[in-house]
Image 1 (cartoon, rainbow, N blue to C red):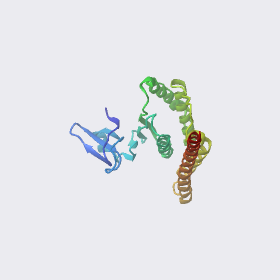
Image 2 (image 1 turned 180 degrees about the horizontal axis):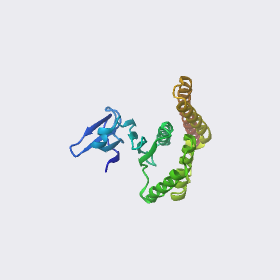
Image 3 (image 1 turned 180 degrees about the vertical axis):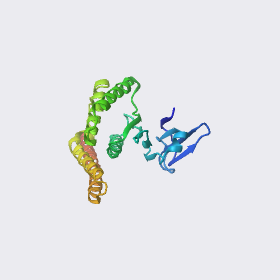
Image 4 (image 1 turned 90 degrees about the horizontal axis):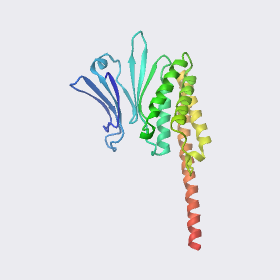
Amino acid sequence: IDIAALSETSRADEGHLKEEGGYTFFWKGKLANERRVHGVGFVLKNQIVSRMTEFPAGINERLMTLHLQLANNSSATVISAYAPTLAAEEEQKEQFYADLDEILTIILKEDKIILLRDFNIPKCHKDFRTYLSEKLANLAIENDNTSIEDDWQALKETIHVACKESIGVITRRHQDWFDENNAEIKFLLDRKRKAFCDWQNHPTSSQKQGTFQQLKVEAQRKIREIKNKWWEEKAKKIQQFDNHDMRS
């Protein structure tokens, strides 16, 4: 094995450690004063490390990237991803996929993309991994010489179809704050993503960078307001029912 992606490393901060067995371990976790949960990393053969021009970059405790120079002046970006579980808060899951979205968006079109992931899929859906791998392999063959926007749209549709066909759709009895405001939240995130793509297409433009940063802050603020408003309304309804029961 030359390269392996790790999850649940549970190590603090970011660093690397060279082992005597011929490998170097790179990790990214939470701050030292925070609870040591999650964590991602790479294990690389020392021969590969010695030829690298840059170390792996830790995005957060769930995402890490590695840039490699390949033969014939080609290159690849390897992503180590550790997704939240199905039981995690919707906000955590949305943040993870938003971060992954940004990583995929800024990767150079010429780069090959290798996604090493733990998507925390239940055991009853193990066949999803094989199913998705086949879909992605076909996608790589079909989508050649396309734009970044087209590649990202095709990737999203492929993952969505793979999930729907192999896992199915879960119908919940009760909606939460995210479901009831899905259209507005989608609009905010789409607008932020388009501004990010526009900035990456013109990386020297401070105006486009400023527009993205402004929309990012605005999206975060409005999503928090949507969530808080939803909970306030639910609390009022609960209080009304409680008052009605007391009078009865």
